[in-house]
Length: 318
Image (cartoon, rainbow, N blue to C red; front, side, top):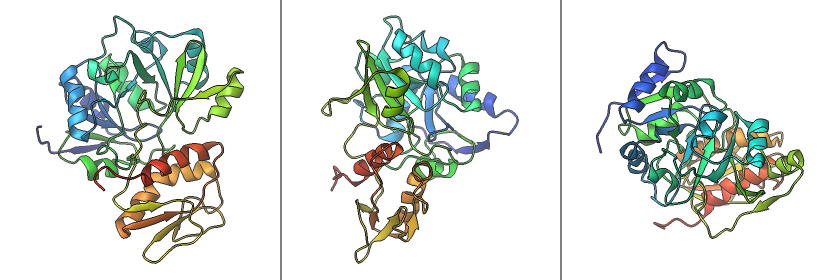
């Protein structure tokens, strides 16, 4: 794989969009900001470009990617949009909701994006510069999180540079990602909704808005990104539901459990989600053992606990 001198360009700099589009059109990778985390983008219609994502991240080829689109019209060119899916798009797009829908037979999306599935994961990000890049490229982009596979997702340009320096020519810097964790993923099949990955848009909220339940997925299937057992992992070991720290541990607190550092001293789940990867990343720099205080498994806490469970799971190389 080619080695690059990675350039970091502010989203406010003149020509940032054009530079990103030029690189993507040439088959190169570009790290882009979204409201969730930073993404590692490639032209989703170019086989070789998409393969570069897997190589740069060290990502397993069976783990599908998310297609990011500029609007609903672009989505309808690559997936079949049912009435139920259309309602979700109307309510939540642009925003941190990914939908897994049947791929159109005439979809131009490169085969590695779907990892052999007959579905595609698609979302419209709530970040103006990213939608502008997609619009000017006139093609969807495939964009998983811009980090080595299985490691902590990046919430800043500095995080991207730390993990992928030299593996891509350009990072667009838009400051810290507001949401801080990846999008909610919902599968829509036979007029039923399935939660494939929890996020800041909760299954309860979707069920209430649409007036129908959101069902659990089959845990044995890899049907969407972010479902590997060990994922979002720091170098340090992680112990969950800790009310006090043991010798040699750094304790990440929440609410009344203060800890050495805290996800949210006030017990605010949105704040905890925003701080999650940044806090674990900071803890990982100073300790080989991390303990994390209990986080309520409700609302956004479900998504936080999903990421924590995967961060604490046994590693393949352990």
